[in-house]
Length: 141
Picture 1 (tube, rainbow, N blue to C red):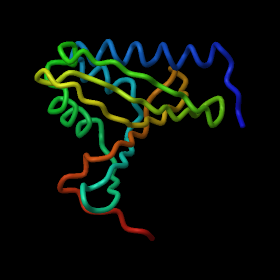
Picture 2 (picture 1 turned 45 degrees about the horizontal axis):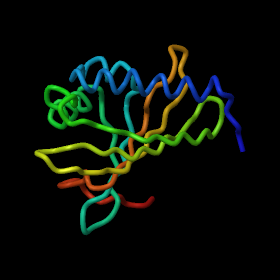
Picture 3 (picture 1 turned 90 degrees about the vertical axis):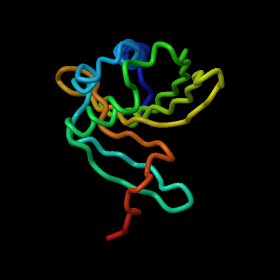
Picture 4 (picture 1 turned 135 degrees about the horizontal axis):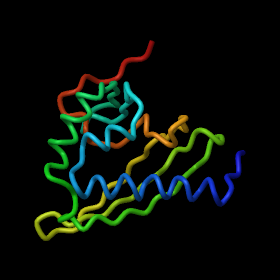
């Protein structure tokens, strides 16, 4: 099992601080600059099975504009992240996020695979339940 250094842990924290700041601003194109495409997505179809697909940069930007609108600043987002380093260059980060939507506190749990590139960390895979409305279920083989 790979044990990251304090510096490696801080590099992931710093990456998410940058991501969160851009998300608050609604800077979707700049968020896309922090990713590797095609991006893998794993989710599920409520009441069904898992669903997977890949997004191009354009598909990611469109989906995030729809999900984030002008940014997340008014949501009061609080995130607790737990990085699991698979190697010095791969880290799966579990996140539990809580936000306020129309006066209600809502929580979600998701994971991101970050990969180290020459330019620094980038997210490459997103995994979260419940996004698969209308997606075909995953098939083996």
